[in-house]
Length: 221
Image (cartoon, rainbow, N blue to C red; front, side):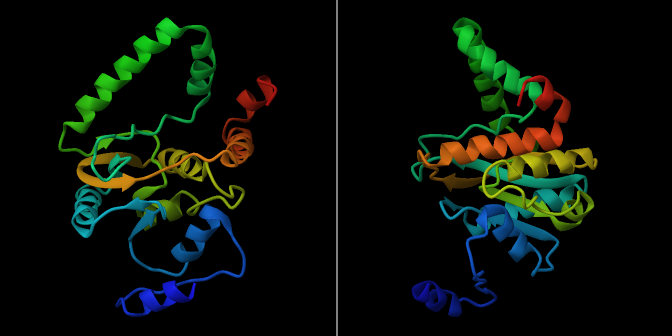
């Protein structure tokens, strides 16, 4: 913390906020969001990187379309850009059922995956932004007024995971659009650790119980 404080102290306009306890990803973002006044707010994971030029491209996209609530860049898994991360899967009952049934129909699953890959390649080849249903919280630029109209940034019920899905759903239900801007690029060196799986399962339950209660009950949680 001392090294971080010293590094931040020499950067103009940067303020370090240190809570008394680990609030989790969502509440940590909420804390910073509540203490700034900018109309455009960038959320960035500690394992993600984006340079100012590409942030400016995201800002340009939001300025050009008032109906856009949030945008993300084209995101790679590695700095050499060998691996392009796919767009977020829609967190909906239909997709949840499809992913469950996919285990029983490998042929159909392979066809659907190749079809999705072709679509993503076509989308990424455009100048954008192109519409998407859900954004990933690792790198996203949000419009403050849209976030407030949708009830605020992240629901504190989520310690980590699914808070971005919940926000995406609320923004679209409030009448706003979400998009990916292929001209902007970032790197998210995500690594899945075993301890994350139970947390993801728990927050998945919270998400579906809150947003799709009938589906949640009919499927026995």
